[in-house]
Amino acid sequence: MAKRKLPSLPALAIEVASIVLGVLLALGLSEWAADREHRALASSALVNVTQEVSSNLETLVLIHDNNVETIEILKASVDSESDQTRSIIPGLQLREPSWITDTFRNNSWATSNF
Image (spheres, rainbow, N blue to C red):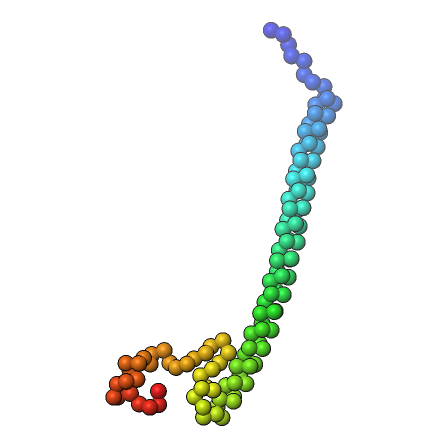
């Protein structure tokens, strides 16, 4: 049997150092790529949130204007005796209660309050 020659201590140190350096470099590159991806996702999320807030603000302005108009109509209808004025609310046009049917109205026990 031939005797194997052991590598010299400096050659062994260079080999270990190069392996450690390679592993650290690979981990650093992986971390850098993951950080870039997370930054892109965060930027995209920020754009989406900004768009959603703008959209919600536009919707709230429209709803607020409609609610102001509805409150004005309701205030006016409190003083009004007209049934037609009371039954029209923007976005919610109530003609009569849904449970009142022609059959109910035609029964003798139905009152004129309906």
